[in-house]
Amino acid sequence: MLRSFWILALAAFLLGGAPSAHAYLVFFGEDLNDSEDDPLAAFPNASAAEADFLALLDGAGTEDFEGFAEGDAEPLNLMFGGVLATLSGGDGMIASVDAGETNTVGRYGTSPTNYWDVEAGDDGDFLITFSEPVAAFGFFGVDIGDFGGDLELLLGLEGGGDELFDVENTQGAGGSTGGSVLFYGVVAEEDDELISTVAFLTASGDGDAFGFDDFTVGTREQTMPPAPNPVPEPGTAFLVGLGLVGLGARRRRV
Image (cartoon, rainbow, N blue to C red; front, top):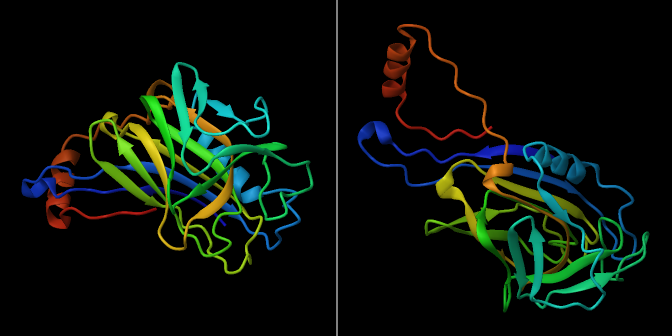
């Protein structure tokens, strides 16, 4: 399953209100597995979602955890250019398994051996804190939701407030989706959407241990600028304005 979609929240500014939510570009791809012992040899949906995500970034860094020693524990500090990302909570630590194997309970790295073994939800949520607000982040998650966990991400924003995202991973039961792989990436579109923290929660289940790998961080300067809006033909702006008044504010999801 591969999805690349806009999450748009529009306020009824034509009625005199001010915008109250944010817009982000979100990428998601998932490849299902049903084994705690045998990893997926390839994950085309997740990899395609990552490729689409990376295509919007220029010079962003990706951490594959291969430079760390097995057993290195949280808090773990990662440098992405001038941005320090600190991984804490969730009893996180560096784990390593050989290619073609898992840790016997469904978790393994996506490139190729080391990964961050961590738990979302339950007590001591997995948290990422950025030294400077960032505009984009993405990651691979392995073995998420195999016992019913529904992963959520709570983004703390630079200007205050937060945004909650439901990752919408497939929820298994009793390990039925063990060893599955997903990619999830978020890109901010406006300066007031820049991200200071990311907390990994679970909306269902009693927490969920998973493999976190190939973590990408992009600054505002590394995000590709949106295409400029075309200049309307004479008279077009007036007609469009009439159409918007007739329609009012609406929610669109592509």
